[in-house]
Amino acid sequence: MKETNQSEALGQWKQPNNIQGQGQLPPTKPNSTTKLSYFFARRLYSLLLWIIFPFAILRLFWKSRENPGYRARIRERMALGLPRLKGCILVHAVSVGETVAAVPFIEKLLEEFPSHDILITSTTPTGSDRVKALFGGRVEHCFLPFDTNLFASRLLKKVKPSIVIIIETEIWPNLIYQCDRKNIPVLLANARMSERSYKGYNKVRQLTAPTLERISQIATHAAPDLQRFLALGAPTTKAQVIGSIKFDLQIPANLQDKRKELIKSLEARLPEGQELPFIWVAASTHDGEEEQIIKAAKELRKHVPNAVCVLVPRHIERFETVARLLDDNDVSYERFSMTRELPDTAEVLLGDTMGELLLFYSIADTAFVGGSFAPVGGHNVLESLACNTATIVGPHMFNFQTIHDLLMENKAIIQVADWKQLSEQLQRLATNDILRQKLSERGEDVVRSNRGALDRLVSLTQRLIQRS
Image 1 (spheres, rainbow, N blue to C red):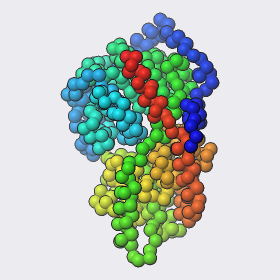
Image 2: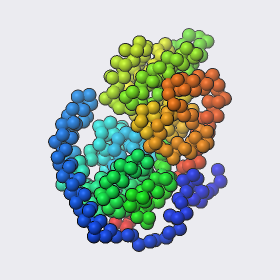
Image 3: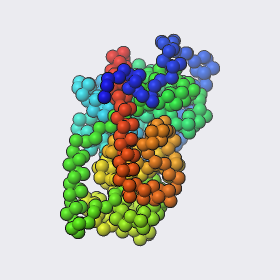
Image 4: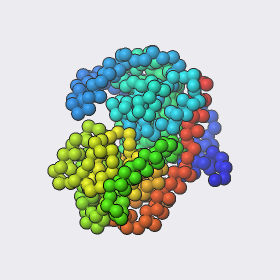
């Protein structure tokens, strides 16, 4: 591929001319009315946090009934028992999706800043588990404390970060306020702002706008996100489009070896001369979606009898619920946690393990990305495309709208409205290898041509640390 300049490398992600051409404008200082309204808005926000704090703790214990990780290290939620660090790079990735998306970035930080400790914070135990599995002892980890002034100040005092990097869209007013007070730069990385999120933040604009002004840089992944951040009050000199680091996903070097082992094991168990099944993944599914997946799987097997669905719920605490649902619907299934193999007779393989979604994508002929039948907003379709897997999504993709539109424009994914259309499209792809191959190649081309945001984000991080 020929060398390109930065603007060309961004491809569809170019900054609008009005942002590129503005130069270094002096930041707009809030007037006294804005300062006063911000003062009272943040005080009210803090008061509400303290009111709900006991109930939030109770909710963690309630959720720990299905996932004990929610009550583990609960002192960290109050900034107690944290590692004592100095000059670390603090990266906040709220849960599994953000952690996986940030892997190439964190690997680059480890490479470029060997003298800095890397502290990754998350809010869910599954996010914590992924950090440990992906990085082991190379990074520190703790849960992000509740966003009170006391806890935020205590966190910064204990770990003394050189910079705080927040992945995607987690706007914590008190944490950002305390960073601003202590002259700690804050980078909102791979930032996205859906239309739905924009409307929510705009309702509390008196708190949102001054908070955005205190962020050092907002690195958005697309122009529509940038425009929404600016409309919410982010200064033009502090916001820019750099592209999405999700395009820079790194496929693990051993993934193909694991894939070959699974396929080889399945071949050995099939009767001689029997073809491999048509394998499709229903990934990151939510409550209410599995019912539709089961209907689609049953309908598909009427036309493609050897079709096997790998069903992967989004949250670990729902594995048992989904298993009961399969039982209730008389679906034959195996659990990957027990067999570690692809089924030779069962209709469904329940992917009840964490951190193996890329492996499932790699063995699949086709993938359906969940969170898009339910009005959740979709999940990262680029993971399946990076694995060269033909991909289908449902109607609700508002959390990835720009990426979704780009992929649809390039005919790189298929969108369906319901389980009936999903079954029909799966049947088309199962019986047409050329169509499936073209779809996966288009997706892979879009991913390849939009890489480069990772290097730009690392460069921006370096500049902010040097200025601090």
